[in-house]
Length: 180
Image (cartoon, rainbow, N blue to C red; front, side):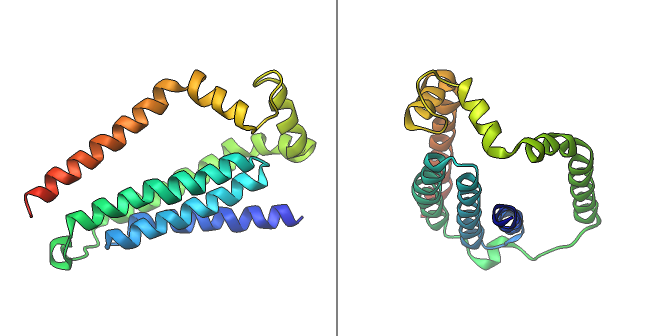
């Protein structure tokens, strides 16, 4: 019962903080909301008994990557007048209704059957079953299993992510160089 309550607290926190990332006009406030979203997501990982992923979520994303993002945001040095005036258009309302409708349809139709099996058998049993199929000799969520998954099975997406971050930083420096 306590896990269910914590899950809903973390889920609402992730959704609220994620919405604030998009809705905040000040980029620094949006970045801080993203840090809050990362912390709530790490709490969800703890509930899934993936403690290594939770710690990595906090250390890598909420720590290192967000320091990089805040550095780039500060380097851009956007003023309030450069952000423009807030506008509400009909397209923003249509977009909001579409996102809420699509999320509701997926939750009502798609996720119902997926969570029935989790509730029937228990999340711990399913995690144990998943651990049997990942890496022989390594428990699910251990450092060895995660390293095997990231550096052997998913090396291309891992490297593409680092390349994407590098391109973003170089682009921000080029944009900021014109203002300096």
